[in-house]
Structure formats: C-alpha cells, structure tokens
Image (cartoon, rainbow, N blue to C red; front, side, top):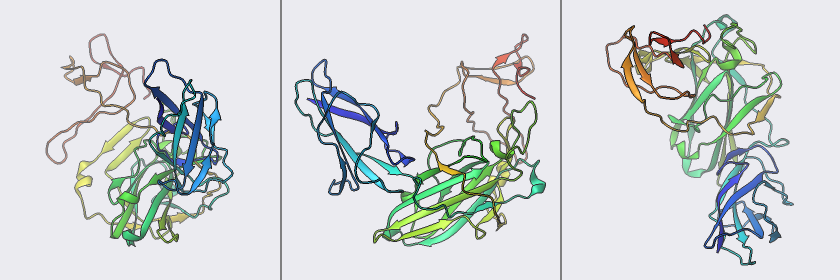
Length: 370
C-alpha cells in the first residue's frame, strides 16, 4: 500500500498567505513494500474540510511526479480563502492507496483581488531620523466573536515589525517585512488570527523599529535613512462573518502610539532594552500621524519566514583575563542569547557578540564593524 505524506503547498506545510493563484503542490510517499514508487496521483482540493465543495480534482494522472504540481483547476482561487487538499497515489503495480491526511492553505490578497485600504501611520517626525527607539501602535475595537468565521491580518512596515492580537503574537516570523528595494517592492505578510480574538474588546498592537528602512545600513559606512526618515506601520484586519459579511479594520489616524522598552534598536548595532519601561502600565498613548505614502508597491510575501529553528545550549562558560564572562556556543550561528537576570532598577547588563578570542584569550571584535 502506498500513501502520500509531508504534503506541501508552495513548499510549506499548511501555509497562510499563498501569494499566487496557481500554487504548486508536493509530497513524499511511503509504502509497505521496498522499493515503492508512484505510478499515478490524484489531487483533490475543496473550500471545506468535508470536501463537499470541490474546486479541483485532477482525477488519476499517470506519472511519478511528486514535486511542483501546479494548480490548473478551472475554478480561480479566491483571495483570503482557506482551501483543503489531499492526495491519493497508485503504486508500481497500479494499486491505489488511501487518501493522505487533509492539509490546507490560505490564499493571500492575490493580484487582481481586493484593494489595499490601510493607511500608513507613524509615531515619528522628520526630526526623529537619528533616533533608534521602538514604538508601539495599537487599535482597540469591539467584536462579537461567536459570529466570526475567519479573521486574517495583513501587515507590513517601514522598518521592522512584530504584531499581536490581544497579546498573542501573530505568526512566528522574524525581521518582517524583510529587506527589499522598498521604493519598488514592499512585502506584506498574512496571519490567521481568528483564535486570538475574544468577545468584546480586542486590541491589535504593533511594535515597530528602524530596521533596514530607516536605521544604519552596512554599519561600517554609516548610511542612515536610505529609504525614509520615519518608521511606519500599515495593516488590515479582515473579519469574515458566518453570513458572508466582511469587516475591515485598517490603520488610520484613529490608532494610538507610545514608546516601547526598546530604547535603541539597530540591525547592525544591537539593542538596548529598558525593562523598567516594560513594567510601566500607565504609559500615555497619543494619536498617530497618518501619512500619504504610497501603497501601490505592496506585494504579498512569496517566500518563507525567517524563523527560530532551534535552541542551542552553551558548550562552556568561562572568564577571560579581562574578567568578562564568556558563553561559548561552540559554533558560528545567527541568533540571540536568552538570559534570565535579577537585580536592582537601573542595573545594566551588557551582552556582546563575537566570533573569536584574541591571543590573550579576550573577546575579539576587531574584525567586526564599529
């Protein structure tokens, strides 16, 4: 018996935000004999998990292809809709196996779909070019969650952002929206946030920092403000009710902002986090500024997120001749250090990163940018 597993749509498992109307499907196969190979396949896709409303059925297609089978259904895929799909395979003897487990994918705002209604908002002015602190921007709204069928958040930023709904972070992507030639192409991301919604008052909150858009570029040559002088945020929350109605909550001048504990945040220079600000619950929120920056460069993200892949423990811990405490992870990597500290208000903990030690056994940063 042969069966498909590890089903992928656009090379991801159950992706949210598929940025094409003709996604590609792939899978692996397993069987109870060795060797086993595929002689034919069938893909079925539907708009419901019970497969009562099928939009694509390939029927039995002969061949061993199991990678990059492109959607060619006669029914166009709609934007911001969840689809379900499954695969059945035939083995080398022509015997059909069972259907795979059901997987799903959610389409993004595909080109030709609904227009972008969010406005660019900022918590900065031109005078803030040389500031590197983070900003929170939020919107509160009321909702009857029992009537909600689906809720998708589309978001992007001038800078780097993280966004949450009712304190629950949307997605697990890092460094969003990524680095592109922003004047020509700015990616937006899509998140399924239905499970984060609650009855009554809800809050969308974005945390935005300079990133590549406004912050220092390349570090050692001190380019700044290459793409713009102020950070910004732009988002749309689409709520679809069970009766088919849609409600859009978008960025506009009704949003509010305040400073974040990230009092300094730069791609190439690191971050200063003031935990005292994180403990303050009475911060004053002020209205954001709505700007006229364009939205015609916004395109859905068509790749995978930068994500945390694993947690690595230090191989050893020691002090240098200079008295610095060193955590040696035994390899070069991209990541950050998680620590738990205690102390008095105003105490300062500094974490520095480097690749090697000098001849005396001290942390060496001479090969890094200033």
